[in-house]
Length: 523
Image (cartoon, rainbow, N blue to C red; front, side, top):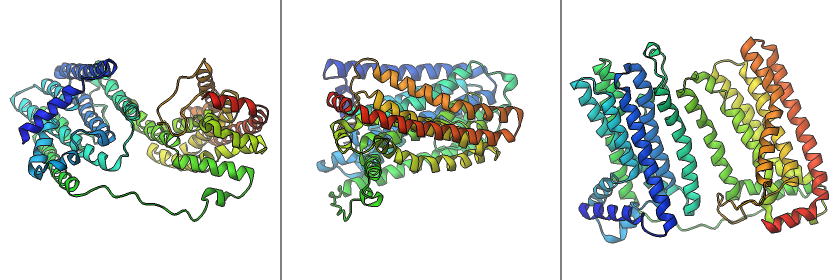
């Protein structure tokens, strides 16, 4: 049975290359790109053989840990489309042991595991500095490959249970975003390896604790062996073995659970009230705000924005591994998240599609439409930014960062929302229709889409300049009094741009109602 499952796995991989010409070309290009990246990474890793142990560790350990993390995230997202999902084989009467062992071994046959194996070979070459160190590197490489294979199986099984099934194109684009975000720090690490200076080897260039992360022990043990820390190396190998054992037990338990349980039937939920519409009252502003809140909670097109915001903090990883002190990286995510949040509603009218006629025909003042659409981001975004400023300042280690981050972030959020109130009416362009998949973006005619997006980015950056200027002065000169100036400037600029944007956007909405209806018909 195990041999049959392995043969089936090979047939499934071969089948991916068959089909339409477009599909075949995409699969071939993606496979070649992944393998080429793995070969390049292994080559650069092998070139660190003559580099100082501490400096080489600062490159190899984070690269290996991030490679395993990338495999885990991608497998979890694609869990609902996993061809090795145990539930697909439940009707064939295969025993739990045969299925768990067969699918586990079949999981070794695939591009992700092959890429990790190639990278593991590169790290063996890098740590070929003596018989003992080489032996530890070989054992660590085998454990890393086993960890990757089991992580993919366990993450895929969990994803099949908890990630809703999505259209192929939607899944591919979500995974592409995840992979790109995770590969950026890897590229930064590898590029930085060419500039490793043995004289500066005492400066760590790796995330703290990367060698002790699940799966990280397999990459950190050879470094300790090369440095002469045999006890620590043995402990890391033991941790790596324990991780493999725990993953194997988790896979065994998941196979049994998936074979013995069925999906629960969909339940109907009674709705005793109109939800937000009852809570916000029967006024034009309340009705628009309730509609916007309902969209942000239930509409997949809006929920896809959460994915973007959740991955914004990952930008600190390439900054940290590229050499920026880790406490400084704590200041980066919050302003970026505020910029993204302010940018999101810049084409909000087009999301309504033909339903925008409700807003036009109601005769409600335009400013109520503009302000009501911003309610979810204002109600949720402002408290989250303030809370995030305290968290970021705690990670940074200085309370002076609270007013600085609050001022810069609020100027980005409020200023972006104010600009969005005008741009979404003045420059609407085709976007995802209601009911379509969140990433199924139509072609935008002309240059309206590019122009509106560029205008939004430039406008948000200009709104951040006053508060940002005093924030930089505070960090460079140590004038704590400038922190309060930055705070109040950020709040002031943001509120002024928001008010002006809502009022002017409302006037444009009143004037361009028929044009908006015509634009919605073209979407």
